[in-house]
Image (cartoon, rainbow, N blue to C red; front, side):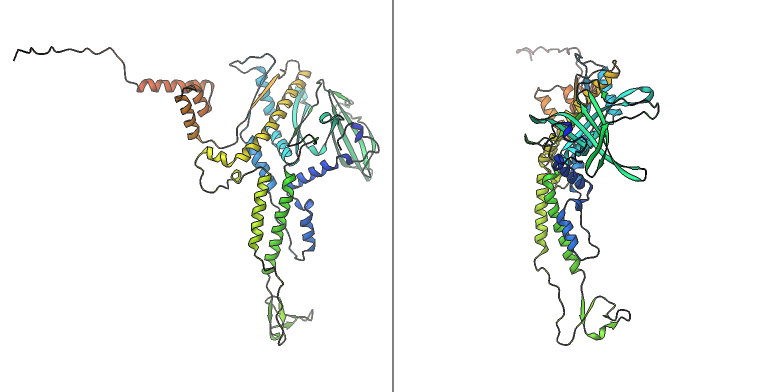
Length: 494
């Protein structure tokens, strides 16, 4: 059930965590657990098997597939850092860097924006939602300066319009912690309500899964002792939380985790591996049967034992004890695991080639792209989500910066140039652009820029070097040679 008003979840007597948001909270927990490899917290079948298992050293294999896939796509999208550009309103292209361009490059470096993007993209895949928060930070003598941070979606509660569950009207960031107070523990809650142009902070206590006290925070600066302003007027008529959603339909107010379809498949694979391990352990622990003469009585326990291994005493005519074992072939279990593994890659829109698992050799970059078609499509989707969020966050950062420093440029346009994340096939690229030049549909200058990825003075230098070499290798053209014609002999002279 979506939250349509701040009072739906915040206030004295309200349940905490909010019961109206339980489904999303459970999905987030599953995503975090699968990412951290504590699978027994969400895989009930594994827990049930371990409780029934009488082996002493029991454990199970927790596959790191979720984390491996997330890291692979993060590297594919952000492994080669994108290039950021920015322009002010009415700004034309110029040869030198504009103030807006210098500012956006400073933001990317000072905010450590690529790292924050990595964290948000991890959350988009694992939880279904990623968040960027734009704030003003006190930099001491430098004054207030904007910042962009990735925020944990587990503390985020979007407030949506009653008429449209995908239209967010406010954001709540709320979390609890335990505080030791006068010999007992108090469970405190802090909430920030982000509305257009305003951020209000609240403090309270939670007791018995309900909010016991709740009021606007009265806090004081530890250095100056002055009371911290609350609520804070941001000076920007925008929400300063930028959400980025994974796949969702019109019935969803938030995104769907990539792990939602993967979890049952992964659980079945781990169950099968656990059962195979149990069977192998049984067969690796043989027993010994024989005549009584081989046994001796343990003086402590009074039982007949043999030091070699477990020993069963057989009287004349008795049959040795045997295991009741499954007579089927473990090969069938491995075939099932192979099938489940293929399904896991299928639902994660991933191919084995993404991990370097390629049969034979790949002839060209184009052949590699065909093997990675599913991965390329998914990386493109993630890139587009991140592209929109980063552009909006940078524009908001420039607005906040200008609100405290009028000389700071306001970005009217932000551009991001992304790499495809695939290894380049230099020969293929050079051949492609040579064909375009020969066909007359691309200039040599554009071809050199694309093949060698250069620009500016380096591009001009390469063009000049090529022109000089062409001139040196061409035949010299001087004055036309003088040709002397010898008159033909007289027909009658001999």
